[in-house]
Image (cartoon, rainbow over all chains, first blue to last red):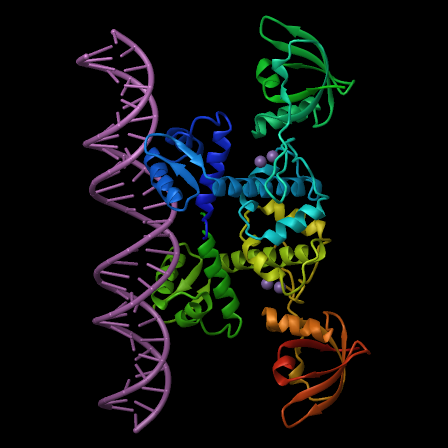
Length: 222
Length: 222
DNA sequence: TTGTATTTTTAGGCTAGCCTAAACTTTTTT
DNA sequence: AAAAAAGTTTAGGCTAGCCTAAAAATACAA
Ligand SMILES: [Mn+2]
Ligand SMILES: [Mn+2]
Ligand SMILES: [Mn+2]
Ligand SMILES: [Mn+2]
């Protein structure tokens, strides 16, 4: 059975949206918003995906990926993230540039290609944004990282990923001199607006608004 | 103006077919054959491409690429051949495997990507089949190589490319131990069936049928 | 040059993937 | 519990890109 590029993008969107609340199905409207299509078009496609057994779909009830659909979604995510690593590591793109190109590359169909790419890149475990790369079997190690703004105590943290992937946000972090893997020392938390005064990598002093710290994923430094 | 993947493939087909006889336009039937579409479908598309000023098209007269179309074709060929080099050099695919994957990769849209890929590969001038790679401006150096079977004298030649790109043919050459850039010493030409007895790279002795030597491009060794 | 064969175009039809507007279902508010 | 609001599906329509079959144009042969 062959799956079109459009269908792949729906599968990926369902996968991505279903993680916000895995118990409840993904709504037609959320898909419509996420894919910039009208709700009626989404319903059309959901019927076709159900026909192909890629999703579980019940009218008015929201949609879930089937096992087959989930596997396909993970394969696409794997390709997307590996290509992002390639673009950054080998072609020297910046982390705010890689996503758009990977959106195209993730649809290239060749098992062999992606396994060789993986080897060529040295079997990376994370992409340039700190997101884990599913292995060839579609297994994903979930991380225990949390947004910085959920921590209420000063101290040392490690920056391991981002919650938001927009160009402006990534460029803002670059401007602050913040890179994945670096340490963040929280020196002050302002209760009033939940802003953070921090030292990045023991050097630059910076200031994170709540909006920024909500989108920075950290682990407590050991 | 955006060009669909399908339109790109038509442009590439016209480009490729027009080189057999550049004076005369490419025929609807030849395109139909080459693209595995029916003639009526081709006519449909030719109208759309003419609308977009990518071709010069006159009913019943055959079709020519416009300057714009030619530029686009060369850009696609450039991408195709650079990706083939990538697949061979960096991912260790064999020369009979790279074409099919490059057929997909050639449609990825990003100027920046292809220029960085070119630099990453060391600005190669030829692809794995000996075909020249157009530069960023779309310039192509034409070679003076000819099929081996057009030569009627024994002596030393250099294998610089292939006329046919099918998997079986390329695998046949690999089996003979023949690689691009290697030398071929013609030791005997049989007038009866135009077959060649040769020594490859001063080592293996081999036998080329006319069909083989017609598809091997060589230059006289200096 | 006239008839026949070949090539090409036209006409009509189909599916995927989108749209808008109306109808229907579910949820929320009063 | 009824009304209103929000969410979803259905109905009808559109384009790109394909198809088949018939018609028209061109090329070839007698
Ligand atoms: Mn991405
Ligand atoms: Mn990423
Ligand atoms: Mn090729
Ligand atoms: Mn090639």
